[in-house]
Image 1 (cartoon, one colour):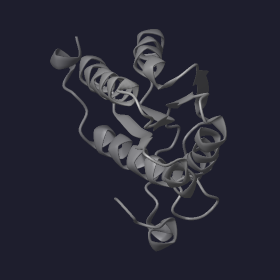
Image 2: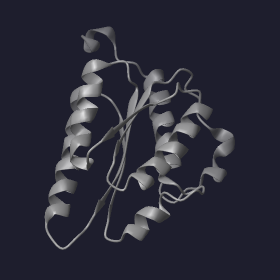
Image 3: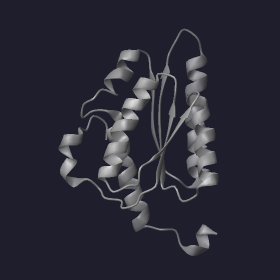
Image 4: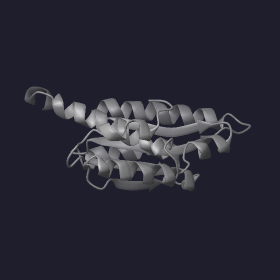
Length: 166
């Protein structure tokens, strides 16, 4: 859905009545994560979801751990949406955090059979993260909410057979 604007799909918003979503965000560059989470929460409510649970964690590296714990504690969650910023500096720390975070999210998604909508922004310039979290219709929070609504709707239309759920 890259570069789609909310205004171009606003009339066809997928409805997921009572949808249960958690948002996990890093407190590093918190203003960016919060801006995306606000837009996301608003659009999820417009799509019929319950108010999302919001969890703030120390950094992006902790997000997969928290996502896994959330699913262990509340397996009825239908999606997890993650927000954060990983800013490239002069060392390899950026690559380590980015790679561990992304592979951790992949493991949780498949292990727990829950969609994880990933809007962790690995950027070389902080201005790029600011432009993706601006108060406009290209805010990545909107994109995350749209993806979550669509995949939750799809999963409701294609439930696992009882034998597979056990």
